[in-house]
Length: 365
Ligand SMILES: Cc1ncc(COP(=O)(O)O)c(C=O)c1O
Image (cartoon, rainbow, N blue to C red; front, side, top):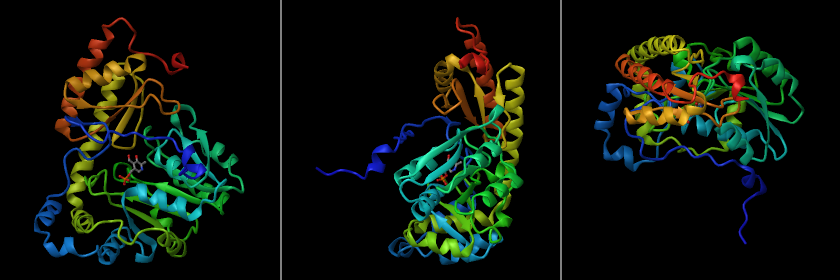
């Protein structure tokens, strides 16, 4: 009988919706307004030749390296950050090695690392989902080969500062430290300038969030040139397709478009947080384009009531430490108006129902 590797049987199944997401998409932290018009113009002008040829990434990789103020040898374009995570696991993890992550966090670290045979060492976030720097440092062992830190983190929106990240890199010289900056544009703090001087540091960025290109699948992995040479060995030379390459080049040239969108998201984030505060709903202050808040036992009714109003939000109940939590993505000013009106209505409606809406975290256990 055909059997998979043992590691495959240990991989948790991950089931994001792969269809049917109609309405205002405040559930997956994507850009809700769309990419730069320059990208659309380039798409419209693509010729047969672009589709007929294998993708030519070199010039785009050079442009992206320039955009990030890095050398081309330090930069690899990837099929989203997901591929970057996958490549790091393939490059550094032997069966029995350890992936060290704070939890809750983005699911794909665990999935790719487990598929490579890693043991997953999850360190619970501190009080109010603070980055558990000391606890992570204590969990480093000679088998720790990958440490993955999303900052801002998903689904909490909390961040890890540069000094603790550098401490982690220093304390685990035999591990790759991946700093996942998928939400960088909404926070604007980065360790990218450290690339090249810290041999085990990698930084990932994506075109899926602020840039509005989640459907194209394009991301970046940056690291020191020697290590990036090794990472390149395990990837496909063509994992970023020619259409994505053409679009990425336009996207990075239109920073004004991104700045305008990010300004609205940051403004919306403050507005949503202040409405939640006013309504007595516990939330965790976020540096990303989403906010996590606590609804409690009525979370499914909440998600459904928002859906009936045409707004998709994400139930995060099953993430560690997130019982009763829901996450909402922040979009443009106009979308935030719509979201806030719906939030007020739904919370009002559910507060009138039998079960109490406002619950404390401790009451959820
Ligand atoms: C922290 C984090 N990293 C990476 C990703 C995925 O990025 P990409 O679309 O570039 O694969 C996500 C998507 O939700 C995320 O939250």
